[in-house]
Each structure stands twice: as structure tokens, then as C-alpha cells.
Image (cartoon, rainbow, N blue to C red):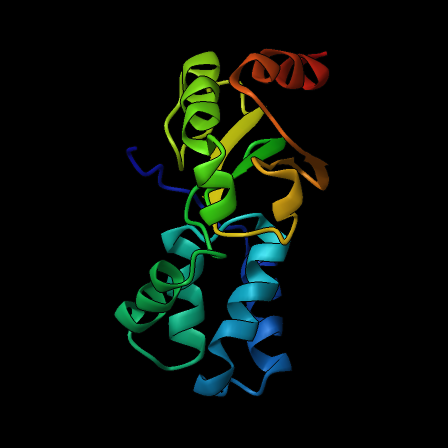
Length: 161
């Protein structure tokens, strides 16, 4: 996935600065600042990370290290309908890999990518705490249980229109 250079507007830079100020530019509050920034922008492109690093007086590499360490943070914009397949033990044992393979095939994207139309993005997560419904798929805030590969096309169709 090639990274697209984005140009931050002055009001966006000011917003990032306000998040940093809200946490007194304390290095120990970096995760909170990143969380607020991702909430605002939907993801954390390099340009946002650079503004945070400069404002909080820390190396960009440290910010990048935190962003890439925690799976909650993403440097790629999510789709309008983010799809997450649980690959925790119960879901995995009950066929989550086959469900994931079917989503990849139907959407023609890999895990971590967003469809060209911006509608769908695909990710895996560890456990949603619904092991009795394994395998589990989440689309946005909606959870689907006991998903089989044959169900994938129907799930995608729900969000296409």
C-alpha cells in the first residue's frame, strides 16, 4: 500500500495542537493525544504524527513506534464500513480463516486495506467476547455471529446500497 501525502490545513494543525495542549504536552500522554487525533481524522497519517511530535517535543520515531505498536491505531484510512473478523481461538477453530478468505475474495482487498471506492476496509481482531457465536464478524458496530463463508456475500450486500 503506497502512502499518499496529505496536506494538513491550518485549522487541522490547530486541532492537533489543542489535543496536545489538553494533555499539557506531557510525553506520558502520547497515547491519549493519538487517540483523540485518530478520533478526529479517522486515522494517523505521517503528517499528523509529525505535528504531534513537534508540538510534544519528541522524535517522530517515538510517535511512529507507538502508532505501529498498538493495533488500535491505523495509518490507513478506514472504509465507510470497517469489517473486522475475529481471529481469536474460538473463532479461529470454528472457521474464521475461511470467512476472512471469502471477504478478501469478495472485496478484492487484503487485511489492512480499503476498497478503492472507500466503502469497505478489512481488519482482524483478537476477541470480541462473543465466543459462543464464533466465528464473529463486525461491520462498524454491528456484530454477526456464526458466520459461514456462504454468508459473506449477503453481509457485503447489506452495505452496498
